Length: 468
Ligand code: AMP
Ligand code: ZN
View (spheres, rainbow, N blue to C red):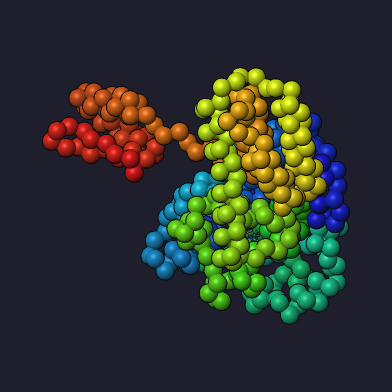
């Protein structure tokens, strides 16, 4: 299995630090608004990377943070006259809903920056003790030139950075020893959330957050660190400088970066007005379509979002789901149990598509080619099954299709509708709970039914229910 490592600029064979295990950290969003479809791209592609490792039998420890302290969050909180915490909590919840809609698996852990400040302070102190950081008037800076490998990820040269940096030096930062130095801790300004530290009451810089959270939840050395390509510099370069200087070890073995999502061939931005939130797309399409669209391109290529491409994704997805439904329909009516010899030979042929899928995914997660293999399997299913097919044969084809679409995070099996008897039983249990004044249980049952699309109505004739 090969993956493209931004650090070496080549496709490398994946060798885990620990056999059978993958430790993976993906930089998560800053939560000050609904996530946009650009933010959705790393979520979907790295969830697919995770799913493929799991398909291959790896045990994946997947950590992805929420940046819940940041200038943009504070600005939004001031605009609304609420606390920064209220803003971040609100949009974390909304983000999780979008992720569920896109069938992104919950992370093993979603650390919040604001809950890890103590560890960040310790890491900054270690950097000061080792001579990699210094304090000036309550601000702590990282001494960039002290770290020998600086620039190794982004392939930037310190002197080029320096000449660019001078003109960028912001007022207030002229106390830095060097224009290349970056902030690890900054004192608070009026009305900002702040924490006590040995240097000032203030808050951490953005880069130290990820260094600390990946160390705490995955250890000093990890297999994969990932995010959008805009994070290569300075964010990931700075994370490497911090983590490797503090821990004295190489940080991540592989660095994966997704390409950008554009809209109508232009950079997606709020100011250009060509900007969509996942929520907006969800009003028009099932978010499975958005997921399928994202995976139609290689994760490192730029991807253009347009109405035509979304329609194409919708049609493609429908073809796959229809093939699965066709198999299930045939399975219900199938008369013979076991495969015939002819069917066995056909299964051998169909397995070529699974191998083609794996070959594509083994080549730096080429989901575009992997999807082509799924379509090959779909075509095979449509032309090689009928009312005479055996159960075993149909089930084998369905299992293959589901295994592959599972890797892509595409759901082809609709959840079974709840049976009327089961609904009635739950309603009876709810009535009993109410009688015992166990309202918590009664509400729980109502919510459970609602989640399955069953709406309850208390009427004079008793409780009635309907499907949403
Ligand atoms: P942010 O909230 O800006 O820190 O972004 C969260 C994640 O979304 C990062 O991994 C970014 O690189 C990624 N990202 C932001 N905009 C885009 C875009 N237009 N296309 C692809 N990835 C993006
Ligand atoms: Zn990060």
